Picture (tube, rainbow, N blue to C red):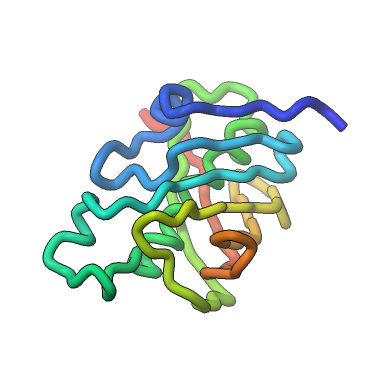
Length: 149
């Protein structure tokens, strides 16, 4: 098994075009390049989506959990594109979504994605978001890779 490559916050910033408040991945561990990645997101009370909600009601919206999975898939795509200069990945679609349990402030969201198919610039993955082994959400994600001009 190849060594695990860990992308810290600085490397994640270099990989993804997203920035605060919409960067939803803190760290990415590439387990098997082009096959499987695991990201993480620390859910905190000070985030914009949490402002104005009661302490006991605060939870990361499921739409943002799915977006965090989509952002993590960028690490899978990075290893499939030979020359990443000028390449942009666009989240195209989601299917087979299952929403199970909320992720609350103080939780660390584990974002695991597995490659299902890579063909002609279209990437299909299966993603699961968990907190302490408990499933938060799962989905099949589709991303397209384009060369920007």
